[in-house]
View: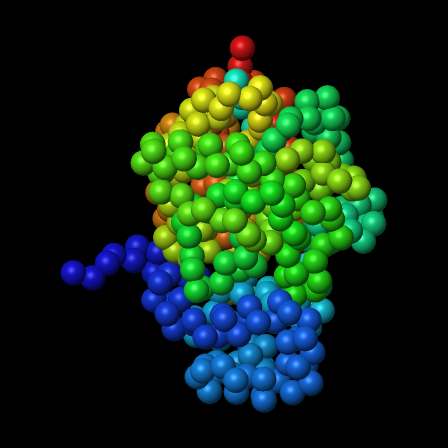
Length: 122
Length: 280
């Protein structure tokens, strides 16, 4: 019998469950490798070559290079693993997160200063 | 006899650590947040415990997807700040309390909670930001720390009920330790926030404040709230709040609120903070 996933209909949200973790295992483990300064340097020097060392799908590799975080989440990435990529880029959490919302950083920061996004239709 | 005298709840947003480390706490953006911790820092200076059992979640720092323990207790004598991708935070090494940790571990496992034992790990912002918020920037932390890492990244995390019951088991464990130690338990993470997808930036202040009310006055009822409600109402990362129930379970049924603070935003997150003492 299939497990229930009552969280599947939460709008615009991917819950990082075991199915997602299975899809994203190598992607997330690549992210972990960026916790070492020497790996960050090698990644920055040649991203494509570094990514070839990890048994990820071509789409996962392309999405890393494009810093397409929504796509990476759908391909099994988890935001706290992906954080190693934008930390390597010297970008803040807020910078990376707002790229997933279709808002500019200014618009997003203003929304947060105004109390954040209301839960709305959920 | 050792005893748990107080509980602290606080969010552990990484940007708060960066603001402290980069001397930005006085900026227009950050001043209101840090002002909310001033009274707690004074309280803490007068009530500094010997040991803090610090409940937090590791953010893919010590634990990759190779091994994902649901509950992991640190039994080491020290823990280094983790390099999360921009170098380790410039904060002191965290000193452990291996004797109390071993005692709590054995006692809690014998009470049917199957903890994972960790003898070496680095600790990330989830553990060090709360220490910075309550103790500032000392040369050495004034307390020993027993880290208790909870998986809230990979769904499903432990239920609120399980967390609450674990807190009770920890209290029984501490109270059976012979040495006369003043122990606090801290629950960290939350409050409402979502860091992914087009719904990122979600904040739910009414829900957060109701959570604070119930954590104080009706923790047993609150512990029965299902994960789905956290995810819908407090965002995908708001599920971290189940960790606060471990802290609350370790306190008495009735508590006195020494401090309560709520602030939006810290980066992407609603910040909540409580200082609770066991009611006499």
